[in-house]
Image 1 (tube, rainbow, N blue to C red):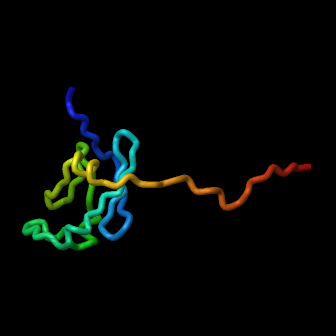
Image 2: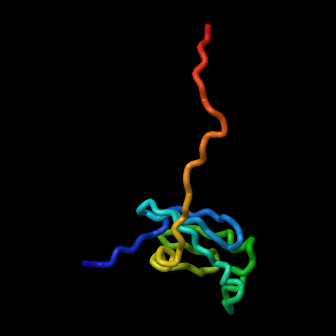
Image 3: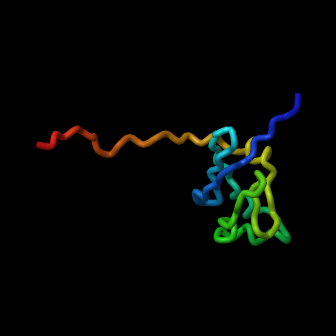
Length: 100
């Protein structure tokens, strides 16, 4: 039996070098990339700049940046923290009004 690899289908920047990533199985995970700022990335050093970091995209199930840097789907899925996102309660209570 082969290993199942879950791949990202959507990603949103949520601040401080963190991405909220939705996987094909419906799971939402938060992946924290703040450690990139302290690593020696040589040709990928532009990823340390927040404005450039936010230029990520998903192509063929892989999270990528324009400079060629990418992250393996299994790494994202295994290291991401399960997002605890719940629907918000309505701010107002809706009631029925009769119109006469």
